[in-house]
Image 1 (cartoon, rainbow, N blue to C red):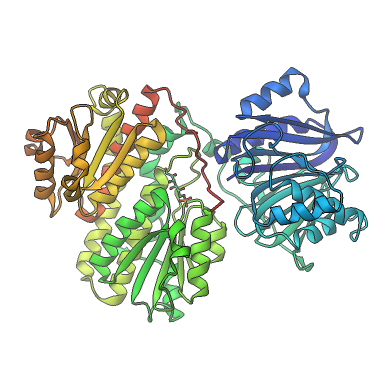
Image 2 (image 1 turned 120 degrees about the vertical axis):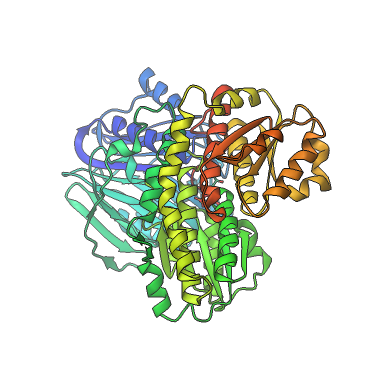
Length: 623
Ligand code: F6R
């Protein structure tokens, strides 16, 4: 939800620039407020915090609030949970006299009770945040039981804390020591340089300086000094971990000449989809060692049903997953929005395979649901883009979607790469159960391998001067509402098209099963409310066309997403966006592309902040 960065190195370093640069790369995680704290050479902790975006903080720094050079610093970009976005609630937060300074990503569930206790002991609070309790707890332990040992003070302070956190902590008396900790979800990674080290919520924050990383695991603390790092568990035991080198370079996290990350990521989809199949599909054969190991363990033998837990775009991918798994593997699949799962007293046990779909691997709703399913005995398969993210710790097998870093808050390439994993899972289960003829499976695999080239065709056409998508988006831009319909796998595609449009352009949009429209929502249609129909080739094509006719008869404008070669559709639609032919089950991968572009161009035409839509955050690490 929030992004944190920390630095420790030689005295006299321009820590502020390092922190601001890191925050720029973390801003996609939240942008309600930002702040930095630097321990200067004179031993003073100088803090600068501003409500609003990073630009406000950068301007304050330029206009006189720049902390002096130092050896140690922490920074934060916030997506507010407790306390409104304001200068006072912006991180970093300090204890009573500024001995301890903390930044935090996550949520302290028992903060009210901890705060009350600390206030009774005489601590005075300045902000409305849950985070501030951490600073006071560390101060109390540092001055008390830990006797000036900062790592031990943080460890002791965290014992009564419930919730989820990734934190970075500095102490005014320890100019060469940065302490971090991670628990219950939020990601935390160390970057190792030459006598200078980094701590962040995302590797991209320090990739410019180093590619040598150490991932901090759940329930671990790290002490970073210029001479190296020490990792300790919350129970006090020490852990040895060698660094690994990441392959991506800073360029991969930059815009590469596109005006927005969203457009860049839409255009990266052929490559992302290819990567998502890499090593898994060869010469018409499926290779999924991750699931083979699960199968060998015997966990899949008992499985009689599947539950997919996910949110937002990943939920839509899950709905496509339901369709193909039921069709190919003949197993009943329930797709539940993760925020509802835990509280629905779910009927899950060892006969249920839980598939947790979360590109970030950090979504709190998905994590609590997955934990619950696991506790009830269900084997868990996680589908995620982020290596070693929290969901992977809860899973018996992980399918990495391998889409590369997605910086735009709005999911595009991770959607289609997630679909790839669900297709592979469906094929794996159906081959294992003998419900799909191997020839049919080979046909699906071949069709999957064609998709990157077909996506490229859509993108090449979209870049041509006579393509209808951008002009259509400009026509939609002044409107208030757009409806989307689809049937079968076209239904989740309609939901995803509507979500893309509303979250990035703020035009109200709703997706419906095509047959459901006439049961009420059709009343909303008028000449100012167009309908987008997913009318690609399928066994329900004719039904969708008749739903389009019902709408056109009421003077609403109709936009169809259809399969190349379908000239007849022009009779029923005012505008047609064509996609190449593929198997019906795979059609959402192609149909999603023009809908993403439509949303993107509508947002640009309305002057919206495409990469950071209002009120959103890339990783939603609170329930
Ligand atoms: C939509 C979007 C969100 C996420 C949702 C789940 O563009 O980005 O709806 O899909 O917050 O996120 P993950 O997949 O990270 O669990």
